[in-house]
Image 1 (cartoon, one colour):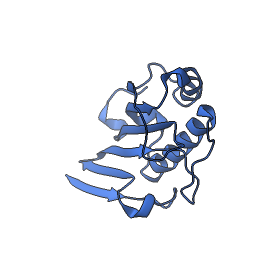
Image 2 (cartoon, helix red, strand yellow):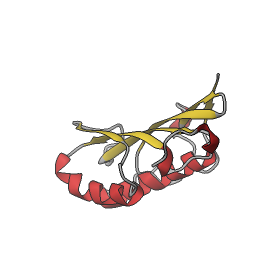
Image 3 (cartoon, one colour):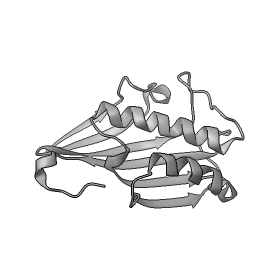
Length: 143
């Protein structure tokens, strides 16, 4: 087993380099990917889509796509998604975006909670992902 903490070039560096975007645990041919919570920021770290859950959700999933791709993974490799929202009344907008990225059935395991606030004042949502990759010849189920 080997652990790598990474900030792939496919996405902007985290704020002040205070954390890694992804922890990768290589497991004999496969890998477990644990992504840090992502919020809707541009490459300069400014929140995009202020007040718009759809825009923020789209931006976050595009950031996640870049992180996963840098590690040879995609949305089909996601095991669990954890979502923090400042207002669960925004769930329909978020859900519509999420269904486009996780169109395969069944979707990944999921947790969604409402929080009083996120670390950036204009952020409405933060999403964490756990994914796994493995060789196709291992016979593990695919979605």
